[in-house]
Length: 328
Image: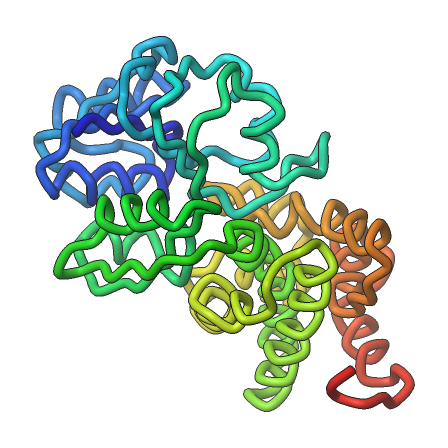
């Protein structure tokens, strides 16, 4: 089995190492020469997860054309580059193309699989893998539960089998849109949860934000054609809880540090990697407007990121909204 991984940041490196550790031949692609050189010479990524000794079966390349003949292509790039990179990806018709991206392409406002359908030279079998898993946990083999989804159940099963081992349990779904949206939309809510923690509003406030955040995520996902049950699963609720409650979450960190008075530019410059919620908040609101969905938490996060309101003002705006039924 030959697998290529497009993108060798934290998550891409973790996925590539996990698959190589299962004995597969894995080729990772990166645009960063020092990353490629480090992996090939020392079996370590000098920029991302640098403390992890990588599996011997993992190699890296700067040449995108080398991924042409692989059985699986795993997409793990920042969402902002998808429309530029995907048209250049060589792919064969019988390849299974798996997205592990948790963001929306900013220019097209498309999910990663929608981008694949639009921009790939050939559209093969498509799938997505997502759920509550931090790169550092996957990289060292800690127990993680994820979900693999495809419109074809057999494809979802094949992806689940590809990733599963004693440390990773992968469920299957035939709702790839719902699985994608769970991983995308929770990033914006995590910024709000981080802001609440930074303001020291307490555990109860965080729990309320997570719950109402899930409600607005589900409203949008259903309006776009996803199954509400998917958002209650690993890729929705599971990833949301992890991202909203853990110090390792980059999106939560952004909200926390904004609430402590730091400038967004300074936070981003010191994160070391992408916080998709920052890039995607405006895109989420474009989708909400397109589908006529009310997303008050996401609106307030976008206003904070734009500098229109302070975190304190945004929290007051949320709690002063008109009262309504919980379930509508």
